[in-house]
Length: 489
Length: 70
Image 1 (spheres, rainbow over the protein chains, first blue to last red):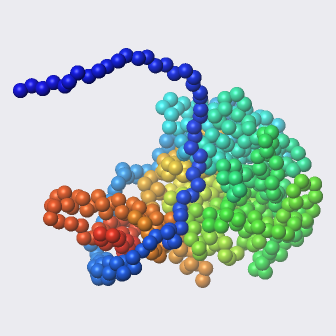
Image 2 (image 1 turned 90 degrees about the vertical axis):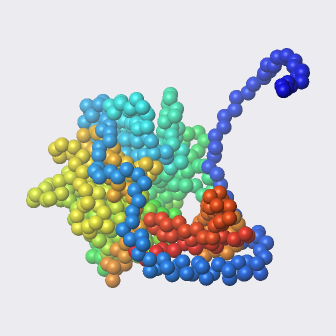
């Protein structure tokens, strides 16, 4: 038997599109869509009750069995290849900047974790510097990556002291200059990457900007504000204006007289001098609380909700307030870096501070004395950062200083693990042959194995950390809480 | 799954409810594909940090998260 389809009618026509229009599409950050569910559901409580009565025994039996079970003791599963050592993945540099003997002052990873940017400048520049410098970016995921040729080089007329990529827009990067200005570049623009700048106005800092941060703007979701910190004692928050200018939105000023001192700390006769701020870190559990490190060696707990006006701060378009609430026990030299732990719980308000005395202090925001005080090195410590994935790990960058005695830590990037030892670093990585101070380091939040470190020879090294630095153990948070509480007593 | 009662915060609860509902469906169909006379009675997932237990039913799911003693 055979079969055949019946006749199908066909016809020929031609079609052509008449008008066309281009439209661009981009997803915006979505609003949080968690609804409150408790009011919407119609529940039949009697059947719910009978369900719960049915399963109650079985579940309780399993829970009890688990408490006593030893079945899984020592059972570990390896989902990824275990890396035993720390490797240097990339050595990036910009030869023109190196020829001018410029140093890497700051590194930053972008929002997607694939681009690393570094700023060139001089940290030992003395009082004034008119050297031009560069901001360079490399995309590490690109196939034709040439470590000596950055994907983008921005010429900047003065030294760039600090950098920060925007937390969600991968092409925006902000930098603070030696002259006190702030500039925002858009790396996707080919002609002129500068999109906003503060310019030199009465509001601008009068000293180099040592740190710049992006702040989420609570009113406009897609706009962010910029925060800058400088040794002239001012902490300023800038917002974007339409003509490419950054205007002052609010500000704080640190004046010595307004620093709260507890009776446990020695009295200092600072008078009315401005207190030079070198670093800042926001708390992850309360967005209004931040910690600053100052040149006098103190770390201070501050709040954006402070109301008291700062003394002697005339000449600014927005009234400056005094934010300091608590002064912590000082280091023996200026504090260069502070970092708040991203692992927060209600009781854990931990932060780290490091400075020229070579020590790292682990503080809880609840008390002035440090919980742990580590003498990591005889040299200055320039930067300290918590690991974004392991609550007990942090990294510190060390550099120049007079080494009278020979200490056993020869390395320049120290990785510390409280889970392994409370006395000495787990790993010390030598950045380069010879004495080469490391000035800055940053963990990559998206690709958690990577750590970028910039040094005085103008090189950025991207280190791949071993698995034990990137995989959280099962009880690390408890261990951290234990550490926080056992020393407070 | 729509959460009815919880001891955790809202967003975590919604996440657990949605994800585990799908997993229960998959686990149940796996059991019944192998033997149609069989059916899922209990699901336990052990992870590095804790153990998740789900007691399923026609209309409801009971989800318990426990930190086992190590």
